[in-house]
Image 1: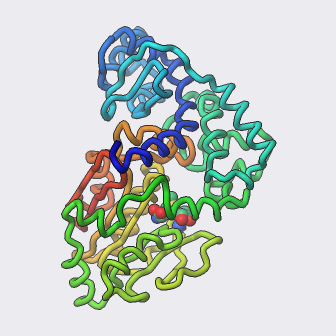
Image 2: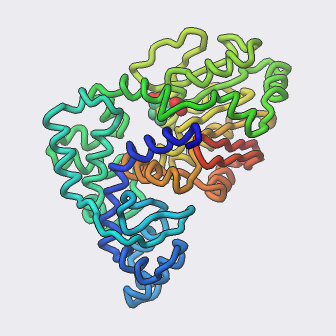
Image 3: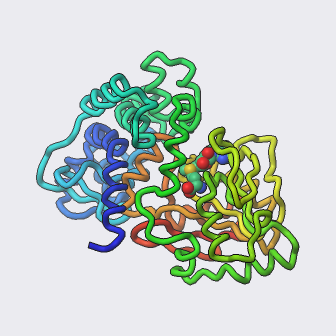
Length: 382
Ligand SMILES: C[S@@+](CC[C@H](N)C(=O)[O-])C[C@H]1O[C@@H](n2cnc3c(N)ncnc32)[C@H](O)[C@@H]1O
């Protein structure tokens, strides 16, 4: 077993609950039967064609939302005993056993957790939210004719609160719901270690043969801030860079946050920026590096594009944007499903990063997609 295996297994287990919510969706669209009929690993396009064939119509006669569901189906359904598994990105295969969890069992479990422990006492960050989102995913899709992907204030989680009669939380973003339920402190702690840390950020960059030194030297010669970590949580990554590059001072390293639980970070500069505020541009211009770690997978495509545009406007031609996200592959398929259900977000592939970069006036200039753990995408101004 490689050193990373326990982390992968833990991540897969923790992210299973929201992914289970996709099981009834697959049943509804007959995807298990289609895969059994295909009888071998199949690409998403083949599944779509078989679905069109079985639906007895061509693509233009299918409801738009149904086509999107098939196309966005980069999700592994169930565990070892499910009928379908994602083999590689967007490849699916039917398995023999047929023991699938139902939405109702997920709903029952989430209700019990919610009622018995109360959302504030759950030790595992966002487990309650993930359970609720998974349980209500199918109902959420049914509620408006299978419109998909979700907007960030209309995910299955807001729908769950609406159905539970909490009108106020039903209108709030998932992070605001977690804050209102007193869970941000536990979430922030979890984000520091995540599922299991095998390398620091500077070690990971070195492993990818990404050369940071010239970028830092350039920032120094331009007398600008070396690094800005947007949504940087408790500053774990910036502190790792400070340790690896002792020349970097508190003033060179800025964490931008919008999180009421984070009030100061010794050794770094903490500043407030709400990247969602339409009227607020990125206040730090021309920095050496802008980091986005696990931020974009929380955002639907349009919101991700808006944030990239704001950064692009602040960037100097020598500035780098470094995106640290999990690779979109079978190992992280349930993480992808969780981001969809909780935020309307998603993991993204190389071609999807290129599309996002292009709409923001950026280009991809470096990329690394490891099988496990966080990858790296560098973007620069066009
Ligand atoms: C998934 S965590 C990532 C934290 C850190 N980058 C990491 O990788 O560990 C998302 C972070 O974004 C912050 N965040 C959420 N919405 C934000 C906003 N509108 N503006 C700034 N930060 C925000 C949250 O407070 C949280 O710390």
